[in-house]
Image (cartoon, helix red, strand yellow):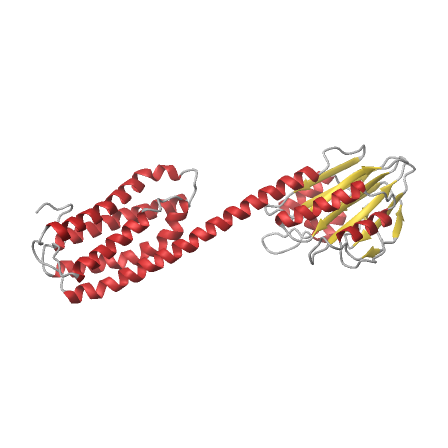
Length: 385
C-alpha cells in the first residue's frame, strides 16, 4: 500500500490509538486558535468547512462500520496537523500584518488542497473500497470523535464571533475616518499675526475645536472648546458648534456662549460642551467668558475668570465676562493637562503653567511626548506694545 509518510508507529495495533490521540490532542489547539489567529488575517474561509467535513467524514465512516487502514489515517492526520501548525506558527510570527500575509499563499494552498484531498480520499475509501488492514475499534472511535465534534463546534462559534468583530471593527474604522475628515475641515487653515495654533488629534477622534472669527469693528473672536465623547458623534456635534458660531450675530463672548447653549439644548443627547470665548480688540483689551473650560494663562500665570456651566446643560445659563490685560495669552484643552506618562503621572496644571510663555508648538509637543491620550489643542496670542 502506498503511504504519504512512513508508518512512524511501526504498524502495530497500538499505533492507531497512539497516533490518533497525539493528533486529537493537537487538533483542539488548532480549532481554538484558527478563528482568532488565522481566519481573521486572511485564511480562505472555505478551509474551515473542509476540515470540519474531514472530521465528520471520519466519524461517519466508523459509524457505518467501514474500514480504514490505520497507517493511511494516521499519516494523513499527522501531515494535515503539521501543515496547520506550520501555518499557525507563521501567522503568529507575522503578527497578523495584512501587508505581509501574501507570503503565506503556498501554505494556504497546501492546507486547503490537503484538506480537500482528505475528503476525497475518505469518500473514495468509503464507497469504493472494502478496506485493507487493521481497523479502529468502536471504543477507540468513541473516545476521540466527541472531542473532534466539540472542538469543531467551538471553532465555528469562535469563527462567527471573530467575523462579527471584524465587521464591527471595520465599521468603527470607517466611522473614525469620517470623523477625522469632518474635524479636519473644521480646523482653521489660517491664523492672525501674533497667533499660533496647534491641533494634535488623538488616535481615537475626540471633540476638540477652535475658531478665529473677524468682527466688523476690527476685533476678532477666539473660541476654543471640547465636546464630550469620541468618534463621529463628537465630530458632528463640533460641526454644529462651528456652524452656529459662524452664523450667529452675537459679538460679545458672553452672548456667543449663551447663543451656543440655546442651540445645543436639543443636540447634545445627554453630553455637553466646554468652551472658552475671548474677544480681542484692536486696543489690546481681551474679554473672556467661560463655559466650564480651562482658564487661560496670561503672562505665565493662570487667569482668574468667572466660570459658568458647560454648554447644553441648562437652557437659561448665563456667562459672565472678565477683562484681562497682558501680552502673552495661552489657551489649551484638557488633552494637555491630562496627558499621562507610563507611570500614570499627569502632565498637570503646574507644568502647563510653567510652559505657558513658550510657543504653542512647544507646549503641544511636550504634552504629546509626555503621553497623549486625548486631542491636544493649544492657541497662543502674543501681543507687542
